[in-house]
Length: 258
Ligand code: BMP
View 1 (cartoon, rainbow, N blue to C red):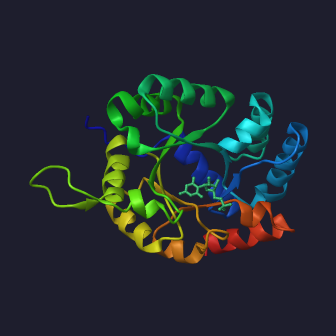
View 2: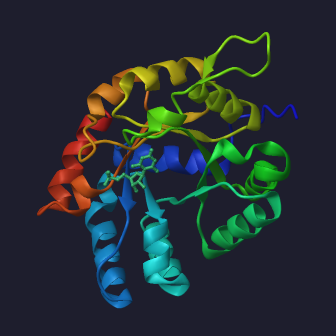
View 3: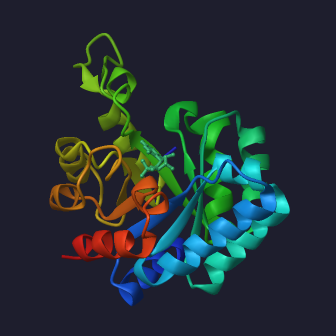
């Protein structure tokens, strides 16, 4: 099960190139809800068009795909691509291998460039085919390592003893090692937990980027997360629900590269 795939995926190159072009390490999180499909699509497109010059990728959550439906999701992904931005699906995928493969294949066929997965399913009979598919099609896989919500400490922060002689170690450290071993493109670590970001950064090889949600509405700050080692900042409501999304994203973008 030794993997150690080197860090040259098309996905990583594309997000880095968008980041350099737009002087930003902000990823816009779109969790669209609450209107008709056509209105949601209009809202989503408008948000992308307003923020595109100041971000490096878009992340669509499951609410967006479920509420928009497949065809309008395809249109939103195309809008992202027209603006030279990679589009990530935040599925937190974690089923058995066959089902994981079917889901990830459907997302990639829809146009998504990367997927967020949950490491809890493990490699064998779990995430292995997702990584293989992603690596053969230039897509990215990003692994949850420590979530941003308060209850995340119950699982990601728990101490785990792996065998009778082993020393207890935090679950997230083990997940970070898996992200490394599996050849992940990224690790999700809540940016509102800078001390954890720092510890994960020490565990990961440099090619694996840290993606940090939890900024703004959930209490985290771009500068603190960045100083701790976060590479990209996943930001939703502080931009999408702002009365002036363009101004809000510009502020985060400036902080993200300072
Ligand atoms: P907001 O900035 O509105 O809090 O949104 C954060 C986004 O990041 C949401 O789309 C959420 O699904 C996602 N996210 C998170 O908040 N915490 C995590 O640990 C992992 C996530 O993917």
